[in-house]
Length: 230
Ligand SMILES: *Cc1c(COP(=O)(O)O)cnc(C)c1O
Image (tube, rainbow, N blue to C red):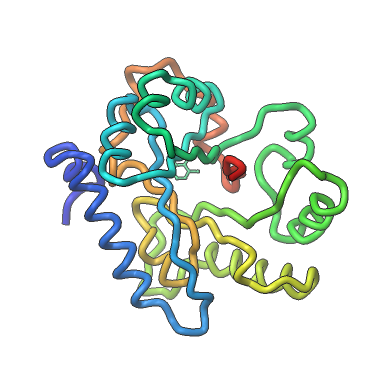
């Protein structure tokens, strides 16, 4: 057993990325057949990591990257080196949206399971510039898998079921973003279609060199994930 990140620190981003992709495929192979057979998207979470590491991961085939601070996302997405070396890069924002009315919409700290269906109905009916594509959660840390699947992931699955019934859409059309460095394989096994992996690819984050970041982001339970429109 190694600590998350030690591998990438020693052997480079390309090696860590390949290992994560292999683990993703192994987890896909273990999925029960009754789950939608969707190839999960790997979002490489590059928050706090330098531009050079993003470019290195891109050169090893990674295309989708995630950031959870708006400012850092904007800086990286407009960085001249990234713009010239990574023409096909796609960014996912995985934190809090700070704009006042979006904040209102998202209630700031994500949604309670009980509010989810009506929020999606509201987005579909009243927000023409938003396209609802799926649900996201962060699974409780340190969940003991010998006690069964992580209940947070099960909640997201049953919410999708409820949503699909209510809106008459097939489950293949509703993404489930769940799974991070510590639990992405388990999340895929139970049906995740989008995993967000940071430290296992880029090494552990060192927050000591940065000014204190928006603390709320560290505490959040259910932030939003916003993908760049294709
Ligand atoms: C930082 C972050 C991740 C990645 O976490 P790791 O444990 O480094 O894989 C995933 N999702 C969100 C919302 C995050 O803020």
